[in-house]
Length: 193
Image 1 (cartoon, helix red, strand yellow):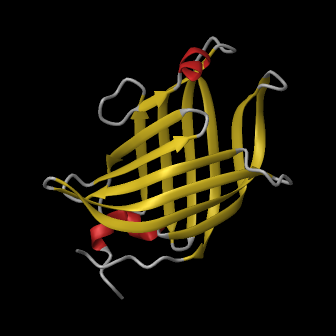
Image 2 (image 1 turned 120 degrees about the vertical axis):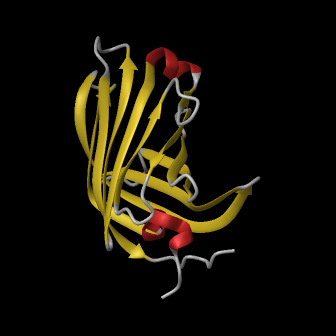
């Protein structure tokens, strides 16, 4: 077996994953109330690297995700971005764009051999933050984001909480998602450079 330690905890994510037990709890504008949506999902994590920033060396995963409401052909949610491993700081960084005009750079300290970890972002943070377009800031501003992930062999489980300041609610609104996925393809980790 080849050495994958230069990818830290990201090595176990490399591949394609699918799951159909997702639950999205969000505000449904058509009904003007909160509701649950069951969904299926496909995630791709393709390894790359290294990327050098001066003395910083990162290894990463090219990340693409799509989710479909059960019984529908068109995705209702997509994401594209990168997951990065900084071995010196022992940080996992997840940067992604949502095509509604939102960008999240979440991160946190993670042990190199961790199989479960949490990534966070805050709207007013310079380190791990959230950036949104004008419409979202005025109507549904994401103020905080927490992502918990666990990998057990070929099973990936996650839950996430996007806390929103929405015009429809007096209190912060928790838009949550959770799913369990199975690995359907494995991608080889390139050797260290």
